[in-house]
Amino acid sequence: MSGIPNGNRDEAPEGRVALRRKRTEDEIVAAAWDLVHEHGLGSLSMRDLGERVGMKAQSLYSYFASKNDIYDAMFREGQIAFAATMTITPDDLGGDESPQAELRMACHRFFEYCTSDTARYQLMFQRVIPDFVPSPQTYELAVETLGLARERMLAAGLDPDRDLDLWTAILTGLVDQQISNDPGGTRWERLIDDAVDMFFAFATARAGSRRNP
Image (cartoon, rainbow, N blue to C red):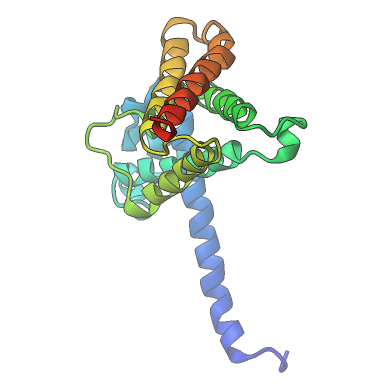
């Protein structure tokens, strides 16, 4: 063992401690998701969470400084998964790489992502926890994903500010209607292509009028 530098031997225990801590943090966050799926996003309590992972509630604060820090970790997980969902490749489009086809695909993916997990949707896109604000580092993930939508607006020749606001209003409107009025169904999912086509027709016409006053 003389060939192993002293520094590596000294760092190995610290690495194992860090790994165990990360695993425990992941276990806590997973248990938090289980609880909010069972009882609702706003019902999460440190006592219930401690019981779920076999800890006293006070012990949780050794891993997360507050309940909002747990929400932040959940928000971060959601944003990482959302970014992967909203990344669209040419292969995903089946040969139709038009801006309109990509917008349709993006809308379908957003809809599926949100309606498949209402608690996650509420945490990421609604303000149901009054005193929760994502940390700057976590919120930056959301900003980066929104940047994908801005790039799609630009690629389609649309206004990346005004049209993006309308676009997000259409997407969340479809999701909210589905969750509120037909949970588990397809009533508003069936409207996605029509909504995207109407949006695209309106936005491109307005862009054309700006170019040709």
